Length: 288
Length: 139
Image (cartoon, each protein chain N blue to C red):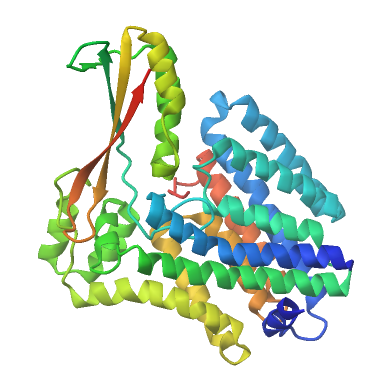
């Protein structure tokens, strides 16, 4: 089948690395999704809706079952819970919620114990990473808000964006853009600084280039390094932590070795830090 | 692995690959927000939180519209629901349920006009401008 042949482009694991790699991927994925449900519940704990309480209980149960037993039915349950939450929040559900649902479906359908299914699981997740990168860049290009730096200039009302952008603009231009409040009549959100515009255009170009870069075996090693750096850079400004973690977990499947197995404690530590920040033991960090 | 399961995964991957292209079309055609619905268009367009609505009604045989100044609670719920859908779906949604509830509450009105206001960043000028979409409902 032509899809089969197309997906073989995405192979490239070290011999014997696949089983541990897929297991680590599933472990990290379940830890992220389970933690996310709790972190979203904590700030509204006293007024938690019945619907969300049920989703939280269901997600927790399925995550624990997935971690302990590795049964595929746990991913079916987690996927159904995720689908219900997306349905309830529609159309406001974030894209990371859809990405999590897609990964749940793949984990539910394909067993890592079977070599053929495990290979297809790896190929599928890698393909999805390429799709997300490519369209992430294309959307920025076609909607026209990066043509003259409009989007980044507008985003300066977000503190984390402003911190990053402040280094790229002359003081006068920075002061002008920082003074806008995003209200009717504000503007122009147009930028002339060449450094700022270079960064602005490089964002979508890099995203789109990463897709073929990851696809081709000859460029994959560099593309993985660039993608990890790009993702960390985006997270510094955007703080979409859950999308970032889920996507980083998927991206690490491009590494030929089972590096992600050694990174399970790192992901777990990041999630613990987020929990401690949210419950107030550590200083509050803004993340979404 | 069964052939049907393999085919289902392949079909899913094909759909996931084509959907964002359809999503881009929907954004262009219906002004849908690129941020949602798995088109991977986060950070491709500004999100401006403010969204407002004004409602006017006209009695039978009268020229002038009257403004609904104090919406009752039973009208506020469908209004909020519509605005939250409108925020992301824009021209893919209409305030039909909201309009029905207003006309139920204001039986003297024979025509209803719903005006939705939203600031947007104009790509050409870089200015934030107010856009208005009007929905008309005869009783």
